[in-house]
Image 1 (cartoon, rainbow, N blue to C red):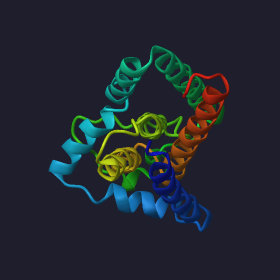
Image 2 (cartoon, one colour; image 1 turned 30 degrees about the vertical axis):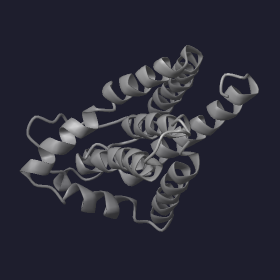
Image 3 (spheres, rainbow, N blue to C red; image 1 turned 45 degrees about the horizontal axis):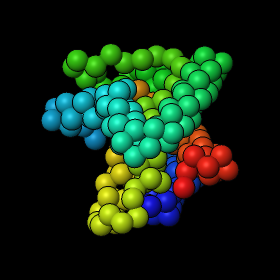
Image 4 (tube, rainbow, N blue to C red; image 1 turned 180 degrees about the vertical axis):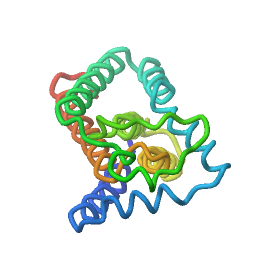
Length: 200
Protein backbone atom coordinates (compact mmCIF):
# COMPACT_ATOMS: atom_id res chain seq x y z
CA UNK A 1 0.00 0.00 0.00
CA UNK A 2 1.00 3.61 -0.52
CA UNK A 3 -0.75 4.95 2.56
CA UNK A 4 2.25 6.62 4.19
CA UNK A 5 3.75 8.55 1.25
CA UNK A 6 0.38 9.65 -0.14
CA UNK A 7 -0.98 10.88 3.17
CA UNK A 8 2.32 12.49 4.13
CA UNK A 9 2.81 14.48 0.93
CA UNK A 10 -0.82 15.44 0.39
CA UNK A 11 -1.20 16.27 4.08
CA UNK A 12 1.91 18.45 4.00
CA UNK A 13 0.63 20.36 0.95
CA UNK A 14 -2.73 20.92 2.64
CA UNK A 15 -1.03 22.18 5.81
CA UNK A 16 1.00 24.63 3.72
CA UNK A 17 -2.18 25.74 1.98
CA UNK A 18 -4.07 26.26 5.23
CA UNK A 19 -1.06 28.16 6.61
CA UNK A 20 -1.15 30.52 3.63
CA UNK A 21 -4.89 31.04 4.20
CA UNK A 22 -4.32 31.73 7.90
CA UNK A 23 -1.61 34.27 7.04
CA UNK A 24 -4.01 36.15 4.76
CA UNK A 25 -2.68 34.97 1.39
CA UNK A 26 -5.83 33.19 0.22
CA UNK A 27 -6.65 35.45 -2.72
CA UNK A 28 -3.08 36.55 -3.42
CA UNK A 29 -2.06 32.93 -4.02
CA UNK A 30 -5.26 32.23 -5.96
CA UNK A 31 -4.71 35.16 -8.32
CA UNK A 32 -1.05 34.22 -8.78
CA UNK A 33 -1.99 30.68 -9.89
CA UNK A 34 -4.86 31.99 -12.01
CA UNK A 35 -2.59 34.36 -13.95
CA UNK A 36 0.14 31.83 -14.74
CA UNK A 37 -1.77 30.87 -17.86
CA UNK A 38 -1.42 30.74 -21.58
CA UNK A 39 -3.59 29.17 -24.30
CA UNK A 40 -1.96 25.72 -24.11
CA UNK A 41 -2.28 25.53 -20.33
CA UNK A 42 -5.86 26.80 -20.53
CA UNK A 43 -6.86 23.88 -22.74
CA UNK A 44 -4.91 21.39 -20.63
CA UNK A 45 -6.45 22.46 -17.33
CA UNK A 46 -9.99 22.56 -18.72
CA UNK A 47 -9.67 18.90 -19.73
CA UNK A 48 -7.67 17.90 -16.66
CA UNK A 49 -10.19 19.45 -14.29
CA UNK A 50 -13.03 17.64 -16.07
CA UNK A 51 -11.48 14.30 -15.07
CA UNK A 52 -12.92 14.74 -11.57
CA UNK A 53 -16.47 14.83 -12.91
CA UNK A 54 -16.54 11.14 -13.95
CA UNK A 55 -13.25 9.71 -15.19
CA UNK A 56 -11.38 9.52 -11.86
CA UNK A 57 -14.44 8.03 -10.16
CA UNK A 58 -14.87 5.39 -12.88
CA UNK A 59 -11.19 4.44 -12.80
CA UNK A 60 -11.10 4.09 -9.00
CA UNK A 61 -14.44 2.24 -8.91
CA UNK A 62 -13.39 -0.15 -11.70
CA UNK A 63 -10.13 -1.04 -9.97
CA UNK A 64 -11.96 -1.50 -6.66
CA UNK A 65 -14.53 -3.73 -8.38
CA UNK A 66 -11.82 -5.86 -9.96
CA UNK A 67 -10.13 -6.30 -6.58
CA UNK A 68 -13.20 -6.92 -4.43
CA UNK A 69 -16.86 -6.00 -4.97
CA UNK A 70 -17.27 -5.24 -1.26
CA UNK A 71 -14.48 -2.68 -1.46
CA UNK A 72 -16.10 -1.15 -4.53
CA UNK A 73 -19.44 -0.75 -2.74
CA UNK A 74 -17.71 0.66 0.34
CA UNK A 75 -15.81 3.16 -1.79
CA UNK A 76 -19.04 4.17 -3.51
CA UNK A 77 -20.77 4.70 -0.17
CA UNK A 78 -17.91 6.81 1.21
CA UNK A 79 -17.71 8.87 -1.97
CA UNK A 80 -21.49 9.35 -1.91
CA UNK A 81 -21.36 10.62 1.67
CA UNK A 82 -18.54 12.97 0.70
CA UNK A 83 -20.56 14.30 -2.27
CA UNK A 84 -23.54 14.88 0.04
CA UNK A 85 -21.35 16.81 2.51
CA UNK A 86 -19.80 18.89 -0.27
CA UNK A 87 -23.16 19.74 -1.84
CA UNK A 88 -24.78 20.50 1.52
CA UNK A 89 -21.96 22.81 2.59
CA UNK A 90 -21.96 24.58 -0.78
CA UNK A 91 -25.69 25.27 -0.54
CA UNK A 92 -25.60 26.26 3.13
CA UNK A 93 -22.71 28.73 2.79
CA UNK A 94 -23.23 29.84 -0.83
CA UNK A 95 -19.71 31.28 -0.74
CA UNK A 96 -18.59 33.57 -3.58
CA UNK A 97 -16.30 32.36 -6.34
CA UNK A 98 -13.28 34.47 -7.40
CA UNK A 99 -15.27 36.34 -10.07
CA UNK A 100 -17.58 37.66 -7.34
CA UNK A 101 -14.63 38.67 -5.20
CA UNK A 102 -12.92 40.72 -7.92
CA UNK A 103 -14.25 40.33 -11.47
CA UNK A 104 -11.52 42.57 -12.91
CA UNK A 105 -8.85 40.01 -12.02
CA UNK A 106 -10.56 37.01 -13.61
CA UNK A 107 -9.19 35.93 -16.99
CA UNK A 108 -11.89 34.97 -19.45
CA UNK A 109 -10.88 31.57 -20.81
CA UNK A 110 -12.52 30.46 -24.08
CA UNK A 111 -14.93 27.52 -23.79
CA UNK A 112 -15.07 27.82 -20.00
CA UNK A 113 -18.15 28.78 -18.00
CA UNK A 114 -17.14 30.66 -14.87
CA UNK A 115 -19.31 29.90 -11.85
CA UNK A 116 -20.23 32.66 -9.42
CA UNK A 117 -21.40 31.05 -6.17
CA UNK A 118 -21.27 27.87 -4.04
CA UNK A 119 -17.47 27.90 -3.94
CA UNK A 120 -16.74 26.25 -0.58
CA UNK A 121 -15.52 23.50 -0.61
CA UNK A 122 -14.15 22.48 -4.01
CA UNK A 123 -15.95 19.31 -5.10
CA UNK A 124 -13.49 18.56 -7.91
CA UNK A 125 -10.58 18.73 -5.47
CA UNK A 126 -12.40 16.48 -3.01
CA UNK A 127 -12.97 13.87 -5.74
CA UNK A 128 -9.33 14.10 -6.85
CA UNK A 129 -7.92 13.63 -3.35
CA UNK A 130 -10.41 10.87 -2.48
CA UNK A 131 -10.06 8.72 -5.59
CA UNK A 132 -6.28 8.99 -5.76
CA UNK A 133 -6.06 8.32 -2.02
CA UNK A 134 -8.31 5.28 -2.39
CA UNK A 135 -6.00 3.89 -5.06
CA UNK A 136 -2.99 4.58 -2.81
CA UNK A 137 -4.61 2.81 0.15
CA UNK A 138 -5.45 -0.24 -1.95
CA UNK A 139 -2.31 -0.52 -4.05
CA UNK A 140 -1.29 -4.21 -3.82
CA UNK A 141 1.75 -4.72 -1.63
CA UNK A 142 3.30 -7.21 -4.08
CA UNK A 143 3.34 -4.68 -6.93
CA UNK A 144 6.53 -2.79 -7.73
CA UNK A 145 7.26 0.87 -8.48
CA UNK A 146 5.56 2.08 -5.28
CA UNK A 147 7.41 5.41 -5.15
CA UNK A 148 6.63 6.20 -8.77
CA UNK A 149 2.94 5.30 -8.40
CA UNK A 150 2.66 7.26 -5.15
CA UNK A 151 4.19 10.34 -6.78
CA UNK A 152 1.80 10.00 -9.73
CA UNK A 153 -1.33 9.68 -7.56
CA UNK A 154 -0.30 12.57 -5.32
CA UNK A 155 0.45 14.76 -8.34
CA UNK A 156 -3.01 14.09 -9.80
CA UNK A 157 -4.70 14.97 -6.50
CA UNK A 158 -2.74 18.18 -5.94
CA UNK A 159 -2.98 19.06 -9.63
CA UNK A 160 -6.76 18.92 -9.40
CA UNK A 161 -6.73 21.61 -6.72
CA UNK A 162 -4.32 23.75 -8.73
CA UNK A 163 -6.50 23.38 -11.82
CA UNK A 164 -9.52 24.81 -9.98
CA UNK A 165 -7.57 27.94 -9.00
CA UNK A 166 -5.97 28.21 -12.42
CA UNK A 167 -9.39 28.19 -14.08
CA UNK A 168 -10.70 30.86 -11.70
CA UNK A 169 -13.37 28.57 -10.27
CA UNK A 170 -12.08 28.38 -6.69
CA UNK A 171 -9.78 30.10 -4.25
CA UNK A 172 -7.09 28.44 -2.13
CA UNK A 173 -9.38 28.03 0.89
CA UNK A 174 -11.97 26.17 -1.21
CA UNK A 175 -9.31 23.81 -2.54
CA UNK A 176 -7.82 23.18 0.92
CA UNK A 177 -11.28 22.44 2.31
CA UNK A 178 -12.06 19.97 -0.48
CA UNK A 179 -8.76 18.16 -0.07
CA UNK A 180 -9.04 18.06 3.72
CA UNK A 181 -12.58 16.68 3.58
CA UNK A 182 -11.40 13.93 1.23
CA UNK A 183 -8.49 12.98 3.51
CA UNK A 184 -10.89 12.84 6.47
CA UNK A 185 -13.35 10.66 4.53
CA UNK A 186 -10.55 8.36 3.38
CA UNK A 187 -9.32 7.96 6.95
CA UNK A 188 -12.79 7.23 8.31
CA UNK A 189 -13.79 4.85 5.51
CA UNK A 190 -10.52 2.95 5.82
CA UNK A 191 -10.86 2.71 9.62
CA UNK A 192 -14.44 1.50 9.60
CA UNK A 193 -13.79 -0.72 6.59
CA UNK A 194 -11.22 -2.58 8.66
CA UNK A 195 -13.57 -2.74 11.65
CA UNK A 196 -16.25 -4.30 9.45
CA UNK A 197 -13.73 -6.63 7.78
CA UNK A 198 -14.32 -5.03 4.41
CA UNK A 199 -10.61 -4.34 4.14
CA UNK A 200 -8.05 -7.00 4.79
